[in-house]
Image (cartoon, rainbow over all chains, first blue to last red; front, top):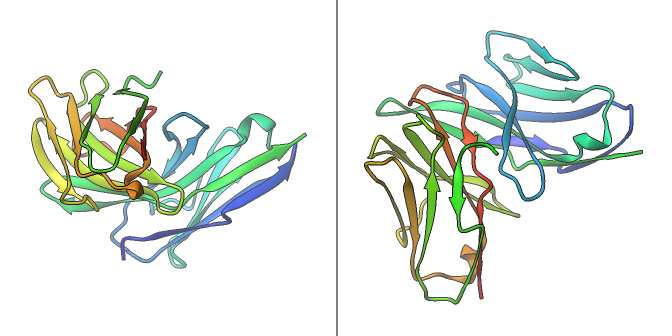
Length: 115
Length: 113
């Protein structure tokens, strides 16, 4: 119930192409869906996030698409650049009691953008 | 620099030993979260503190414990270390319990030999 399943595990995209990473969840109590970007030697950093009452959110070259009925959401990176090469994590937040929210992560997708 | 400071950056220790990882949250953040990142398990939530009180527990082993001090820094204590405890340990902070946007530190890489 608390899992977030992410695919693919790794992705190679040519410069200028579109990178697509998919996530699926079971727990309908999840109420916030962020994506994190992690470079080697660094901690994950919040990239973009969406709430389930919105079907799409765009920030620059990054777009989240959200399908509430299918319990799926995806990250699209348009015009992918070598600097986008990183590991991307989808995540979901659920109220865990005592006024606290718990963030559950997918297992990550290692994106390599080749020139 | 995210504003979340973790020390040390690297730690090598032997099996059976005990170590302490330290985290200073971003200025003004009251909530601290600890995560373990390994290759096969991804990012696993361990424990959360808010203003000195434990608020949520995840997949934290009994050999592990944490606390948050009055100055809001937090320490994660790992004891009776095993080879399988080798991982990256991340601390994250947020301003309030209801703040969804966590800020992560750069992590402590623990190697148990």
